[in-house]
Amino acid sequence: MSGYEDEVPAYLTVRVTLQDGPIAAFAEQEAWQARERYPKLMGLGAPEFFHAKELEAGGWELSGYGNGTPQQARDSLGSYFRQRAAEAAEAAEAGEDKAHRRWMAAALRMDREVVDDLRVQGERRRIVRASHFIRAGDSGPEPPRPSDPDPGEVGESYRLPCRTKGFVVDPFTGTGLSDGILKLDLVRFAGAPAGGPPEMAEDARRALERYPGGVLLPAAYTISERVDGQWQAHNPGSTYSTPQGARDGLATWLRVMAPFTMELDEAERAEYAGAADRLDEKRGNAASVAGRRFRVTRVERLIRIGPDGPEGPRPSDFDPDPPVEVQTAQLKAEGLWKEEDEPIELDERTLELKRLWDQEEVRRAAAKERRNRDKGV
Image (tube, rainbow, N blue to C red; front, top):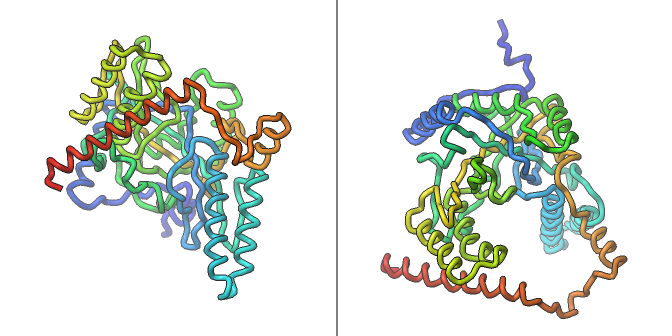
């Protein structure tokens, strides 16, 4: 008798496999407990976009860091094509001149057209969409789990390698039991944010039909803030690869962007900087300042899969910028374009932001020097 798996498409399968090692067992236990402590799943309205390469062996390999809009991912793909063109040009003596022309033609096409799926030099590339979700319970959104990887020094998280670079989106890859159940929960969940425009909800419902399968990416992290008795995203669309990355992002906001955007006086700046110092010292997942509460929040990420591969951008996704050549033409037509050799004059507000960033860079350098001295480096 043949098994049902022989008749089910790969994108509709969920392979649950034994996860080896004590750390994997600990992570599995935590994932199961999270279902009880944070039973409510909520969709975040800001997805993430990658460019991916279809693999001959199956699946799609992600490029690396995600982008906040589809066009940013297209621009990243165009830069990749230029890199491949330059490599082919260096090897032109070995007969790669044709490859150089093809890679460059693809890069120029990305500069002027909205392209989400194309084939170049036998490689199929696609702009891929990852939906974001968080778990929540009576105590609020789920924070990072003890088993979540959290390497990197305070202020140095940006130096860590990208966790999604080279990740293969393949539904055939096995998962633990808890992740397998989470995947089933998410692929059946439209995840359209409450209060969003009707076209966003319609796109979400359509995705359930066209991309009924899914693959979980490594968890990401963001900052939530308690506002009027409710937890909400502090900076929608901003996520980090590690919990320390989210802490560093919040600390930078407390020291730089809060003083700038809120025009804080010296006493208020000191209060916000003190909160950032405590966050750095304790490496905790919560911070409070001036009556405001923040929490590092765990974000689940899912790429939907259909018969032809992973889901691309939706029509309702926020995508304000056109391709670079189109944008340049628009700016020139409006008289707003400046040539590269024209000096740019900074106003006082911009200079104030620069001063704050310069102070933060000096502070970071001094903190790093102290850490190295303490370690005897």
